[in-house]
Every structure is written in C-alpha cells, then in structure tokens.
Image (cartoon, rainbow, N blue to C red; front, side, top):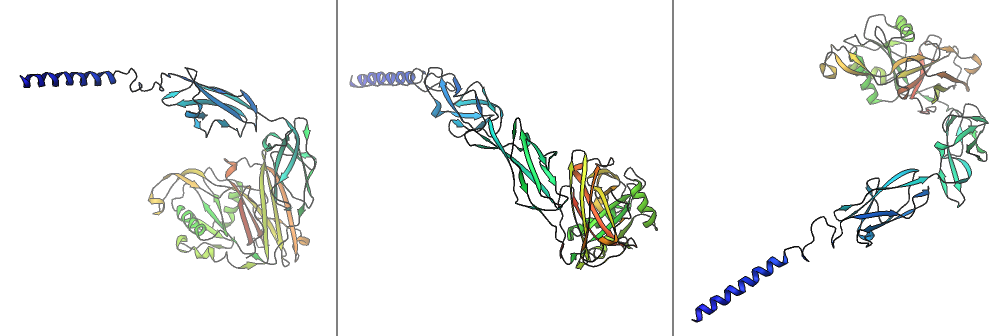
Length: 437
C-alpha cells in the first residue's frame, strides 16, 4: 500500500515538471524569436540631424525602433556601407552619402545626405617649397577659407595663373630666372599674388660620367632578345647607363631610327653601340662591364633636364654645362616610350626560350627626335669653360607615342665626331639635376 502511494506521487511530480518545461519554451516571455530585434522590435529607422551640410560640417544620426524606442547607442551607423565610430560624421569631400543603421539582426532603409561645397570668402596660393631653381617645376596648392576661418584645399576646383597667364593644372616649369608670381581664382574670388623666387641652377665643377647604349633591333630579329636581356642586366647594376631602342623593319621603325641604323648597323642584327663609339661585344650578356665601366668616374660636362605634359604639349627643359672648353659640342634630345607590347621572335634561351614571345615588352623605344638625331650645334660661346647652354622645347606630344604616361627623355652632349661625351635621362615629369660624382 505504501509503495503504490509513492509511485502515484512520483507520477504527479514528473507530470508537473514536464508541463513546466513545455511552458517555458513556447516563446511567450521566453527566448526572443531570432531576427525580431528583441522585445518585439521588428524594424528600425535612421534619421539625420540635417539632410544637407557644407563641407567641414558634421551630421548626427538617430536610430529609432518601430515601438518608438531610441536604440541609437546599441546600433551601428554605416556611411556608404562602411561603419563609423559613434553617431556623428564629418565628411571629407562633397557629394551624396548613403546612410544605413544596423541593430541586432535588423537593417534600416537607406537615407541620403548631401555634402555641399563650403561658401568661401577668400583664397590664397601656397607652395611646399620657398624657392625653386631655374628648370624646376613649381607645384601650387590653392586654399579657400570660409566665414568661420576654416580652410579647404580646392586646387582642382580653382584656376591658376602664373605671371598673368592661365596655366593648365597646378604645375609650372620655371624656364627663366624670373620669380614666379601665381594667383588663383574661383567663382568671383581672386587670391593675392603668391611670389615664388627662382634661383640659378648652379653646375658642379665636375660631373658624373654616364653612358648610352643604342640597341638596333626589330620584332622579327630572333637573336635580338639577347641584347634586350643584356640591357636589363646593365640596368640592374647601375642607373647611369641609358638605353635607346632603334627599331627597323617593324611597326616601331621611324625616320629617326632609320637615320641611326644607316650609320651604325654595319654587321647585321642585333647590333648595339655604346656611346656612339664602339659595338657592344658579343655575347653582350657576358660583357655587361663594357657598358658599366663607361658609367663611372667624372667628366667635364654634364646635363640637367626636366619635362612635363601641359595639355597636349610636351615641354622639355635641357641645360648643358661645361667645366672646360668643349669645341664642336652638340646637343641631342630624344623622346622614348616604354611598355610597348608586341610579338617578338626569339632564337635565344633567354625569356624561357619561348618563340615567338607573344607579349614581349619593348622599352626605351625611340619615338621622336626633338633635335637632329646626330645633334644640334651648341653655339661656341656656350661651350667655353664655366658656361651653360639652355634650351626649352615646347612641342605637341609626338604622334608616334601610344601612351604619353610612359614617355621618357634622353639628352646627350656629343662631340664633333658624334661620340657621346655625357648623357642623362628621366621619365617625363621627373626633374633630373646635374649629377656630381
């Protein structure tokens, strides 16, 4: 009898336990339904303190749940799909910004805010340097100031004039010993004159001696990759040897390369000539020192160059300096192009021995001669000891150039015998000063 009562008691307790567990898991007052946002929240809305602001201002965001509660502190604000810290945002550029908010598993609909240009009250022109040398390029920055004294860089939105003449962009090459006077305008505002002093480009007493390799080549020439490879080995060892690729018999041939070919190719292809004096000894990759040895020590003449693209024009500044009298000196200035891809025959083991090489990169390709390819005579008065000769060339970007961003300039001083005395080179847009050893 006692055993039966105990069993009945246990059955009742078990039933109560099962009922209790079932009641706790039915979702009424238990664990929130996933994705609900908690406490019955099923959607959120983001609002901005302002729908449009001037650049330099800030906007604050508020996130509200569908039950009216403020859930901003528990939300993440996204501006153009990137989360920000906190709820305040200060844009760094004008334009339209898209705003969303996230709260738990919920995402709000997007709103937009417009960031407008500031209302400026004055302009000024600045430069990162206090002076430049003749032949250097000045780069100007235009600053606008609003009524609150806040500054904004507006260089791209302003128009700049130098010495009374409007320029393209914000860069100007100083080709004379005249101070650069720059002003900027935007809308109805004009800046005060900004004066940038121009100093002399003093030449050293001696100059680093550089060398030139002229590679006579063609895409049809299966042995020519051997010289291309050798030039790469030279360039890996020194930056004082400048290569020029004069093409013949292919789409890169032109009147300038043909003129050089007629003089220097006497034993077939490939032919490479160093300093317009001696052929590069075969096999060229085993005789890299023949070129690098000529690019050591010092000599008595040197060059500085600078160049820039202005619209559709190529502007080149070249200065040749002489520490001792160099009678009969001539100036050669050539335009080259890198990165031209074309199929190249290859009978060598270089470049993996592939033949043809379908996308071979042809560099240092001769595209244009600004002077005669054999040089323009420098007036004798400018080749005396401690004198300089300066030329400024302003030409249309050569029509043969495919990609103006890959242009470079090589300049040479050659003697009356056409042999190279010294040389220098640089990509367009790079200022190359006189090199002292």
